[in-house]
Length: 178
Image 1 (cartoon, rainbow, N blue to C red):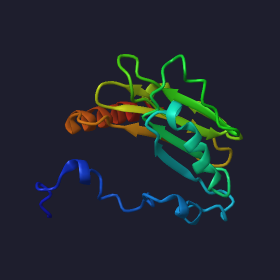
Image 2: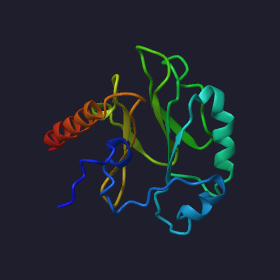
Image 3: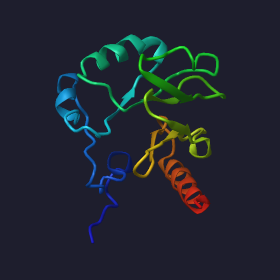
Image 4: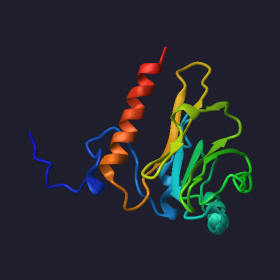
């Protein structure tokens, strides 16, 4: 068995997952990455926007470089408040978000293709000092529903607390399934 004790957990956490096609891309490579040629493809992107107020136009411009509509756009560090959550709408998408209440910054959100039926999963969406997450369950007619989310760990927070909170909540919600 390999010794992973020397690995930096921030750089290598969950890097043993091999069946994911998640990548960091430059804007000019976006269209090559997505599978718009497949009728039922699920295409998602994550953007750490560092303030929707400041960078909303840049997000809109980024999306114009994609040839077709994405299924979900996850955004972190929205820097929204309860009062500004309804301000930043993208044409053709519904928006759900979770904002910090106790301090500035942070926040997570999901833009979901408005042609999809979904349920905001409040039971697994939460924010505390070391983890911020939001989830929705996209309804499928002829197959299992899809749960998609945006999970963010604020900088300089304890990775072990983040992992504990994430996995404890995952296990608790597994037990709640009918």
